[in-house]
Image (tube, rainbow, N blue to C red; front, top):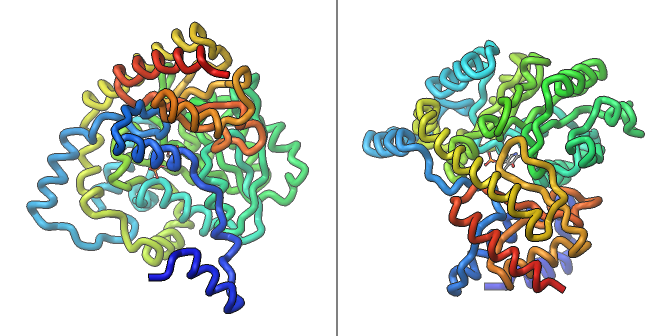
Length: 400
Ligand SMILES: Cc1ncc(COP(=O)(O)O)c(C=O)c1O
């Protein structure tokens, strides 16, 4: 069998080349996860603080529903927009959690929120159009946009502003007039910042006045350590809200999420979903219906993250990392490590090799200043975080 290189070389000789849009940046958190797994396979003990992956399994009720689905062999294709009982259950969640009325027909079930981003970006933006994104932010936004030939207009945020863009930042973009959309995320990844209701309202208002599509990534809702996060739907009924069972509901590998879209976009999303994925995994859909009845278990998981958060907030300043914001939500701490390095990629590689701590370089989230930052995910167990703090202490003391 020819090697991958030979295949590319042969294509080049024939005058063909790889499409530029496929040449996206790696998702570095996933690269670190891969390297950590390889090291673990060789016997190294690894503390996983790289990916946003809850240590707990999916709730018991979800596992039982999945077993029943297997036994009942109900696992064919479903409607592209999702099974009716799940769409209804998600719609009911909006009434219960936020007091917002959402018709089940406006719920589109997707293969993870990642599938939702594909649908939203394809449905809303033509190649060459611009979407405003905050930096630092989740890397796949910019990488998917690149693959679709959609441009990114950067809103560079600051720690002093709690890493949240302001309506003025949006207005001050050089290319404000040519913008087609704005993407907001709260609680944010990697910063863990929650956008306060007033600021969310003013950003939604500005987007509305400028006729921008507003996409709100609400995948970390449920995971806040003070007031609950607000949904963009309370400020703009036409917002496109994207959410997932991956984080609060601990179902990362089940690949199931959802979107709430305005009525006018339902059929477009349905046609795209039919052609891109046919449907989300049937077993995950049937099981996810039970996730909304697992509050007690899910809140107990959140208590573990809250303890991890406390452990990190008190220990890090004592071991030499003292520039970070107290985390409002999600399970990430975004630390300024510029006292040690201006190359976060190299720092995280050494941290993994020398201390067995997998953590994500800030460069993944911020192409401008990310080299001075490191993201620690505290979605693991209390024991993992305690062990990681101890190892980090030794690593920083020896760091040259
Ligand atoms: C902010 C944010 N959005 C979206 C995703 C994608 O998650 P999934 O496709 O598992 O729903 C992630 C994953 O870490 C994330 O952090």
